Image (tube, rainbow, N blue to C red; front, side, top):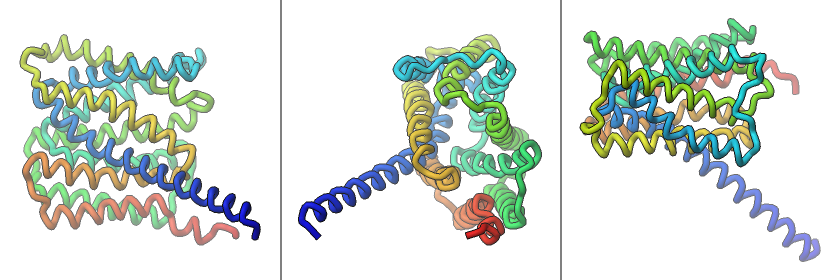
Length: 314
């Protein structure tokens, strides 16, 4: 082989390796970003009520999304015939669920919140079957049963019997996961042709304004009592978790298969549990580690239906 060909092949190999390394690094960035989101929420609601906190997070993120829309030349307006869908996204993806998450974290640990929210892809599977007529395989049903059985054991091992506040917190987080799942499925039906910038920008701005104004009226927050830690957490949630995590996720979506990328939802709870336990000064018990591993393994099975791969034609 001529030396020039050897050099060319070496260069291609190095570029391929570098591209793979960058993709892997960005995948880890998303897992870390979304894994630390739950602790950020926990710190934010220490001194900022949940409605106000969720609104401020989006108001911090909104100007950056406007900048991205201007840079890319994307419209921030949904097509006129999809205004109903726009209202649905604003309320059911951004408005109500993020208030519920903030409320839930006032009563539930950040790690447990992440584990509860990791159920969301399972709800996507169920809604896809109901609304999109997609098939659910037996192995996926088994995975769902394993996952939710493990989740029950986690709640039991954590000592949640539950008191009233903890019970409402768990319900709020699960309700947020259900609403996000439904929104993903409806978006698959109604969101064709809408860019990711358009999809996020105006709904984030309007949801942020609505949540913040509702917080001013209902919660009447005392901003003089808001700690520096909570302000830093809100800034992190707005700039890094909302904007940074979003950009990297959709960058990866163009370079990885949806199945591989969906494992972000399996991996980020691990980071959340470890980071949350460290911050809250609570050791991870053997039961929590065991049941969390089983839960995530069960939900991983739902993403890799064995029958689908066995019956696929070569």
